[in-house]
Image (cartoon, rainbow, N blue to C red; front, side, top):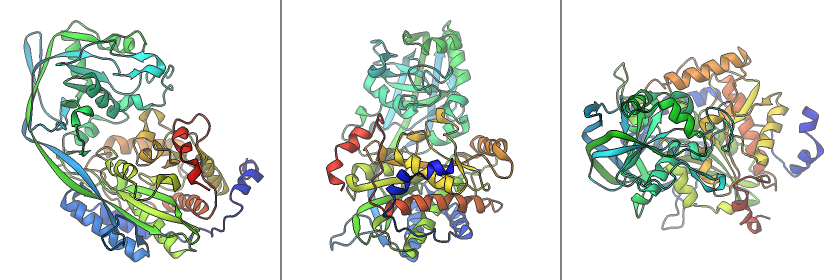
Length: 551
């Protein structure tokens, strides 16, 4: 197997590479960065908060100390700042959120964060009032002409609230037109809300179920009931319906029962191409709450090790510095969402990689270290950069993203988010194999992780991009132990105040993993190779448009 992976073709691809062995990676130093960034003093690193100011200052301080050069916005004197301004719109509910369903003449009042999680309206209104809007079940809320699939069938949703299932029609059976268990973009809740705007609905309420969502209600509540951010839009109504939110599955079941309908039967129908929207007769929805909308400026932070021979060709490492800030308290009364693993750990790894490149042999190509804002608000920092690139995307070699790193010990394998067909995956497999490690496909393709990390805005614009994932086959405990620890994190800590620094975390698996990231980036930075999307990849055509820019 090893000989096959290190075949002559692979070796030739990097024949001109002069990269050195990995620079020493200091696990203790990474842990110290995680401890600082996830401390209560940083208040959960919420964008446009005092926590952001502390975070950005710390990142700049560490990048300077590492020997990186500033790579952000160009200033009046021609020099570079350490940051890129990211203008955002911030929305928050003011005061109580009143919400209720009326079914068969009975009013059922709802508690924000418990039965329902309503996001602050992003359409520019200062108050959202919905009174007795009819409710329609629209299956998975998918309109995919290329798959001959339309869950709406011409239904007029104006003035109506739609209930929509999360994930794809294929999730339950693993077979069909949407890639089986692997989630397509149609399965993402972000797509559901975009489609609500296109359909002219008052709004979509996504029905939460833990398995197809890939996380529990606590994550839904904590991610949707605090401040909401978006890019600045000329017409927000083109991207957002007035109402966006989630409801508990049991509530949806009760509402359908009151309308004489069976939830499971309708769900089964929704998995077929013949499904038609179903109005819940006698069921209406009402809500009323005030909205505080402001324009704010957040920051991406960029440092660079300039290339010595081809500085205009750039390899990017990315990680998001933000988390959820201060929000609803957990059962212990803790309101700070420290985000130690997600993603203080990835940000700390980004800093350590910067140190390694800055202190090692100067690369042929430039290596940029981009810490982005507002990932937790919808990949907004990376989306803004990709839409307003400081450096041309055509000559951006690759985006190598880290969203949480291995803190539980050495593994026998590595993985990545999703299963994108690109040569960077081959590189990951080869470099890992040279270290005696295997590659495991994304263990949870149904979670749609490919669409949920900061490599995605680069990828959809054609830049070869992957997000690394820690393996689950632990040297100490095997796959069963790794899977159990991963599932426990998602259940008990993901997007919850419990995601805090743990002094018992291990650094040997972290260093093992990070050495792979370093070697992949070093190869790319010291070769003339351009990673590519393989035939059939949905982003290949976009990359091919700029082929003349790459020598």
